[in-house]
Amino acid sequence: MKNDFICPYCSGHLNIKDKVVFVAKKINGETGIIFLHPKLGDYSSEMHETFNVSKGEDVDILCPICHQNLKQKVEDKNFVHLLLVEEDGKRYNVLFSSIFGEYSTFKIGKEVFETFGKPVQLGINFETLSFLK
Picture 1 (cartoon, helix red, strand yellow):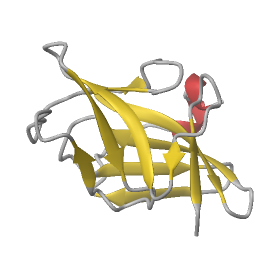
Picture 2 (spheres, rainbow, N blue to C red):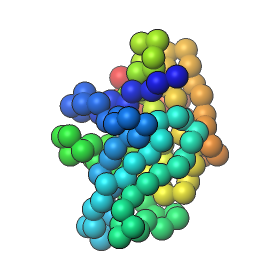
Picture 3 (cartoon, rainbow, N blue to C red):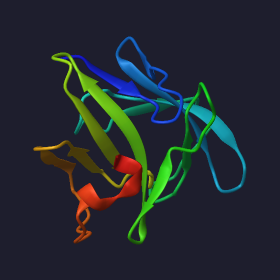
């Protein structure tokens, strides 16, 4: 199934072939391009060999089109917020951890709540979050 990922700010498509493209910005200001796999639960990534992100490092994830920071604060964790449009046209909110190597993803829709990886236990109702509306 083909997943299209959309920036929630500019509505730009973030997919190129079989990758989702972002700009990653480290706390020291260093930036690089990062490719993620569009299949939820597949945590493979690619980046230039000179742009090193260590496991456990929290990075800002920016839209490569409008340059908005896609990171949102949920409880005490940081998540990247995207819109997902599946091949059948169904739309969802997707949140994934901005901490490199923390494999935690949530797919949220009106009647759908799926988790991928090792979801962090937050104990909150995602439907009440204003940025998901």
